[in-house]
Length: 386
Image 1 (tube, rainbow, N blue to C red):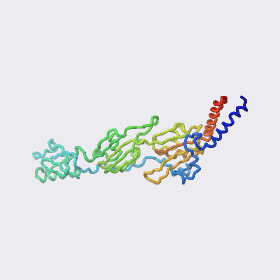
Image 2 (image 1 turned 30 degrees about the vertical axis):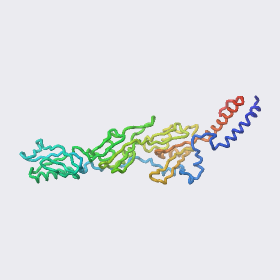
Image 3 (image 1 turned 90 degrees about the vertical axis):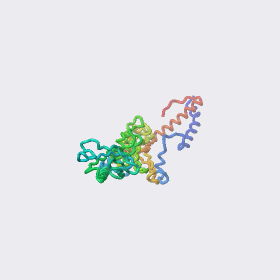
């Protein structure tokens, strides 16, 4: 077959292919690897459900939140020796001594003054031998000691008695810690537990770790803590926030739930390794996020088309709009901008394909069409790479 005969044989199919390629270039003839970002660049943002923001040295100031994460503690002055009042269900131990021998009660040097444990009844009382019924609900230990001393003195059974009252079992001054901790259960505040971080630590701390193989992570950054007080949620935060100084003081009967809360961002497009990535630490920058997946794919990536998609916080602001941040890595200053821009959980980082890569896909599709035409006509198509 001569060159002219081959051209005549393939001219019509080529025209058809080129016509189709031009006619459906914006449709599905040549598949793409992601959304066409020209729409975000050329369309007015008023008509879009999101705002497009170019990351520049001027605009980065509004989003640079990579300041030190630790803050001064707000519970450093919480006392561990506060007033603890007795309530129904508590178990007390009462001992009475007298300063002189030969009395009903022994001296402090001799045993026998222990009247056993006394459980506070539903009506808030205990029954002490030689003393009778004593109302103790709502009183602290020193007040109970004083009241027992007054009652036994008034009965004439002792002179200048010394009374010691201790907690044996705390049933009411407790907090409940449940969920993903090593030792879930009730924890007594009488053991010096005053803050949320102390209660979780007393329960053995969180369990678990990274759910993404191949990525190291801090468990504290992937664990959520919820505190309920009188049936209402008063706090919902990451465990790492507590360790950074955002601890709170506890009250009796607080309910603490520790549960996994995997915080991830997604990387798509022309990168070396796309997929979901756990936020391994607080204040992860865009540059670190791209480095975690191996960076941009040199042969595919469009350095001017790095985008970060971020949903608005609809729970706090129902009118919040989504935002698309756009970065041009061809500009040297963009490296410094990427170091300052913080990545948040649920962010989507998308790197577009270079225009030359898209053209190569078109030429490859045309070449494959030539091959199909040559096979159907029985001709031999030279092996050409585009």
